[in-house]
Length: 188
Image 1 (tube, rainbow, N blue to C red):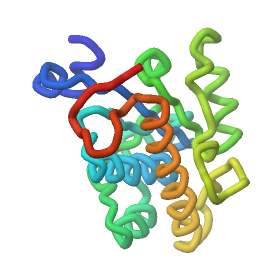
Image 2 (cartoon, rainbow, N blue to C red; image 1 turned 30 degrees about the horizontal axis):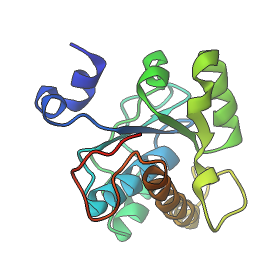
Image 3 (cartoon, rainbow, N blue to C red; image 1 turned 45 degrees about the vertical axis):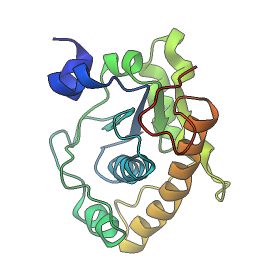
């Protein structure tokens, strides 16, 4: 079975293939990257492009594989209407660099770790997630793991802003059709 069919399920892969595939990456895949996945997933769904964008998250380290998102991340996200409960941490795999169009690091340390794991020909897919931010100059999403709930709120502020910028980028680069034409394909 192909990677696409395994990731999307046989029925979904046969129905509509995604035109953009986005992977959010932090260290353990329990705080920042699952938050980005949940926020971006809702934005894409609200825009009417759920079938056209495949969204996932992963970690550069394997210490949390199989764990749900941090309870504090889930609580902060739920307070803003995002559901992270169905996610499970996983480590970045070699095939992710082939499959995903965008491999977005939450901070410079994870960017460096991704660059080391990625085949040289595919390194152009790796970027900082905060490069899509309009409001925040700092390119790192700070790790809230060792802090209090306010750190998770700060993560959400940054992630929401960058997620809106990323969605606009998908429109601008014609991964997605113009607003109001959900379900139509218009890729490059």
